[in-house]
Image 1 (cartoon, rainbow, N blue to C red):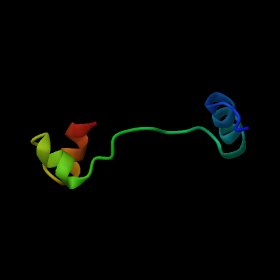
Image 2: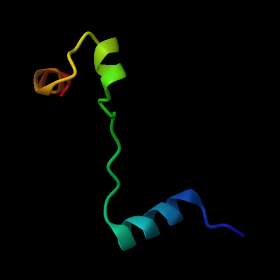
Image 3: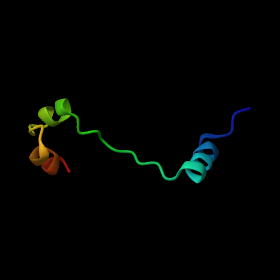
Length: 46
């Protein structure tokens, strides 16, 4: 039987380090939010 998600996550974090979840600011997403696909657009995104 597969271990519960929480147990598998805790094991993976212990072995590999913390999980970082976020939004990937790719060009299409920046444009959809009215931002430019450059350093300034990324700065405003964050």
